[in-house]
Length: 410
Image (cartoon, rainbow, N blue to C red):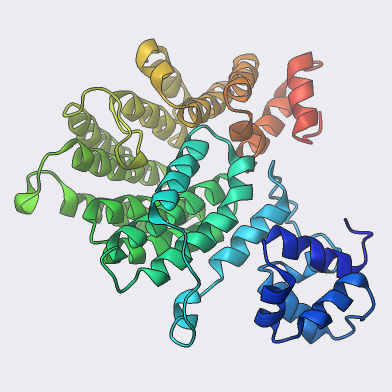
């Protein structure tokens, strides 16, 4: 699309935003005739201020509107089109709540439709469909924000806030997978604020875990550990009259697991063991692995985090032993993102102990199960580069093909 005149690009993105020429003109403060002439190339766009205003209305990076690629950091290879990441960024940069003080909010989508869309987005994430999710998230963010604004003073305010909080969490999760850690932190932080308005402690607890994950990805392991442990202590079953429902056990357990990962990052093995023991005890209160509040928490997931924490501690042999003791039935029942993530951790563990051939097999197994978890994650690119560098002779055809798909030099 780069070779198209700018007017045609304006028309293309206006249609993708599902805006009529009249609506687009109203938002720009121009006439419909002006928009029509711009899109047909009759009127030139020769002022950068106008181009930037158009980009703002279209929630688009101005470089894309000018026919240029948005700047991509070379250290952040991604299996998702960077255009979609920029659209998510634009949606997160919206502040429609402020505009509602001055103008009537737009007609929001029905909450029943929002619930279906949010559920579909969660399932897309847990099946590692990051490309499809990145394409739908910008619109979902805008609709959830609009619903939160429109229902903010009515009887459905808490439900609208709850849905928006979940959309922010989904955004934080997928952005972290793609290596967009600052954006992930922003989305997770937004989720905490919205969760308070939703009046749901457990939703706020899961949002806290998302914030901690983003902090850990940014290299802020100690704050990540502290926030996980502090909130887990407040949500712990039996504390301050808290119940021991499966939902609470799941959120509490997830906070402990994320705390263990942060502790492992700073090399605190004793805290890792304590937190994993607490999570294992919580998992015994569940009937196997569950997915309350989209946590995938349960006995098997505790073991996956035990292996992952061992990798972070540099204990590759321990991580492999945990993997070999996994209950096959419980593991195979987990959703694809969890299992593929584990195979990536096992590839790292095998590389730590010098078992490069099996490290390659683990990457291939993860790719067969959930390609985006391997091909879209910067961490997987790093692991594959290390495996290729340490492979004796020529890598197998399957590994070479995967490297070609991921643009990793053999």
